[in-house]
Length: 300
Image (cartoon, rainbow, N blue to C red):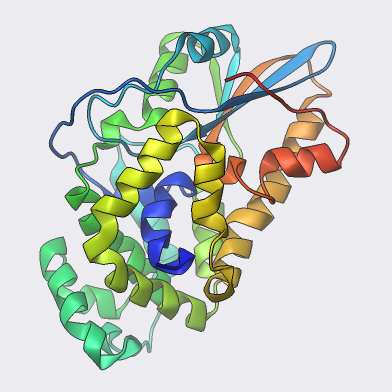
């Protein structure tokens, strides 16, 4: 299965906003975990880089003593984008402002005829009236339908890494910042060509039957701290997903590497928590930092 056909599940490791489409689901057995953690530092600044999965099954144990020490010592948490989980309507409104366009063809006409039964099945499961999808740009329709697949993966919004960290830093009266606004992150999808958007939607329909296996493999790699395993998922068969990869990974990684390097000019200790896909592979944030002469040390 190509990268594009897996990309729906991979959004759990590259897009925080995409993950908001999911609602609570059954618990799973707790397992020990050791996700990767890196450090960038100079004489008066320490920045930890932690790769996350935005939504997790309940009871997933992703903490370790090394991570807890880093988080406790940080005075600031920086995430991809700050989502108000108590008010999901606000995020949905931002999505709809970008995604609703006049004069679009019906969504069924934007996929091949043999994909329409699968599309109709997901729309029915979503509980959203079918005519609403016809008003959405293709990327946004795919986005909404991903919520159905996320539910079927047994994921819980309250168990995501960012949710737990935001609570910890809020309770500790510490600063929480973001690398992108919700609208900026959604904009990366909105600017995709129609061809890429349709590929994304069709690929999601193709990959539905394998989603449990695919997600389990990604989650296992993440919990083991297997960065090569995560990178392999993102770097295979790039020919059919080059535009998606450039928009959702490469461009954003470059922006974030610039931010991290600039943040070294301010004293303090920062925990940066972003999707694990951004911290794996040849175009990772760490690789881009090292090319700029910034030393990155893996500490877990």
